[in-house]
Image 1 (cartoon, rainbow, N blue to C red):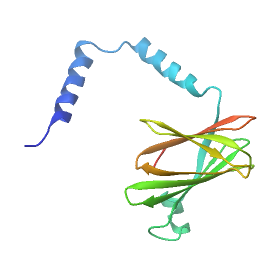
Image 2 (tube, one colour):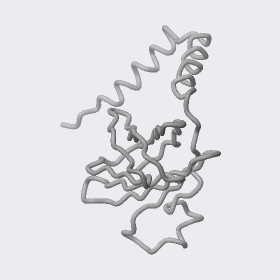
Image 3 (cartoon, rainbow, N blue to C red):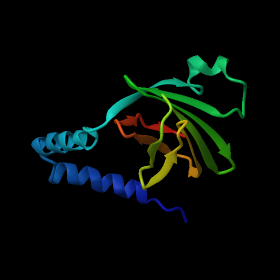
Length: 149
């Protein structure tokens, strides 16, 4: 017997939207409050993704690790994602090199790893799904875009 809770959940969400909609003012306040959660961090935008269609011709072929580059005005974060069965291994580097605390952000949890004096860090056993990084050095904090791995 198939479990069709997703249809029921969608119907309930629709009914709640009609019978008790979230006030527009509250939505604006929620979005504004969420924006403040990284106000102390400099954003690092995704500037290279080896899985992007325009980059696909530049990579080594199927099964090659995924390469990502995030850049801010002062820091570059390079990441390699390798599939290891059902999980992923993340290996990265901060440039310019320096020690840093790295928070691997997932929707359901946060993992903490350390970058060494050469800016290198790694994390094993990550399930597929959304991922973001928060890199904190003595001088600043940089937050990357979210990507699906």
